[in-house]
Length: 158
Image (cartoon, rainbow, N blue to C red; front, side, top):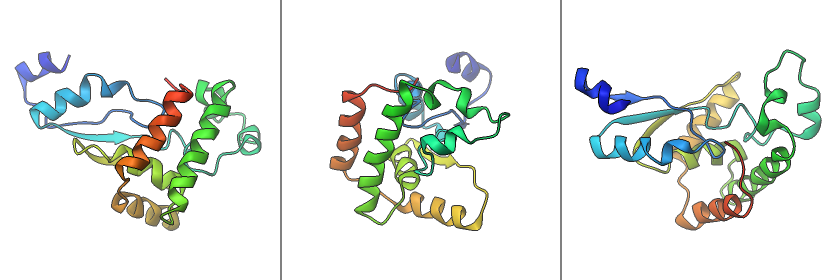
């Protein structure tokens, strides 16, 4: 699809959904953008708050009836247990650097230089500060491997 568009006009940036649970762009879109110098500004790096570190089973159960999240596959079993386990991996890495699981999840999306930014929702000044901290946080290759090891041992998401 992008090849067809580029015949009409150059693509300067792309805004795909990308996070630890939604990684399908790694197969062809990220390599295509890397080869052509197209900037990728991802959205939903914390998967609708699931990777923020603030979601628990109790909080999910108490979300309002009109909230879409409890109806999605990643907020329901069997994936919910695996996803909350991933949050604990992110918490462990973040704790070593005084960062939250959400900041760690954002840092993971920004680890690839083709990802030039992340669109992150926020509701407070404190959340804005955390997002800035996440942009400055760099995961080591060992920490990326720790996350990947968990994901490979427990396949999750879509």
